[in-house]
Length: 129
Image (cartoon, rainbow, N blue to C red; front, side, top):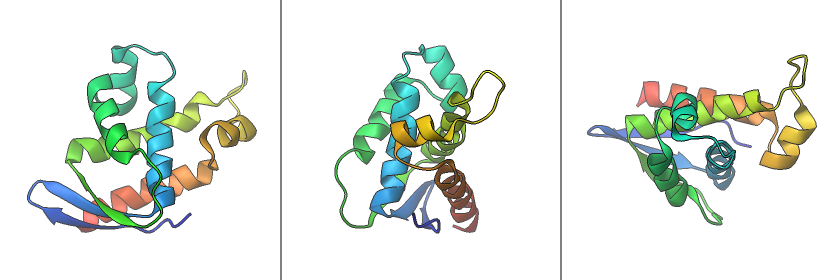
């Protein structure tokens, strides 16, 4: 997965050029946390907002993307994506706290290092915008 990202500012919004795999990773992270059956309180603690905002962003990210394209994000939506990318892996730990790579990979279709690198890229790109 490409771990570099370019963002520009448009007023209070950020315009991010995302590859299909980056969009998919963001969608899968949000989808997994949203589909866990947790309540609004838990979801808000995990991603900083409730189900309605998560569902709206997932709807924008959903679908089969075959080419890179621009997505417009608010600061809150970028925070939501960053939080989902960093929180999802924490749900895949064993009894002793060790990360469970295989179940994570099977469910989300990515390796943890992909999520970590993408999370770093989001922060770096937003800071440079």
